[in-house]
Image (cartoon, rainbow, N blue to C red):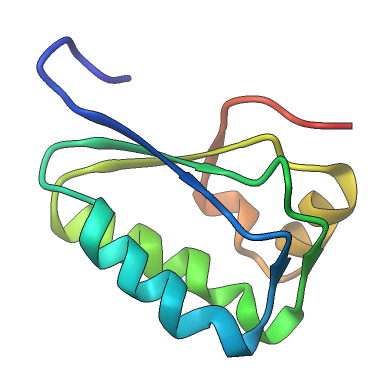
Length: 100
């Protein structure tokens, strides 16, 4: 849970998360996940996560842990949740709400 002193940042994830976009997402994570902040990855507009790109979310978690930040998911559609669950990624996140 965030306290009143922590900054909150929302990163709107792309509609399609694939291997070609992994570097751009990694750069965004490095830039936007600040020490002791709270970051929400908004997946409400994400409709496709390719299996070979799902690991980028784990990279975001690693950056957050390194910087003592909190990282959560929001707006996860059921088909995306199934992919993230199958790859073992979902178990590492706290979900703030799910999309339909």
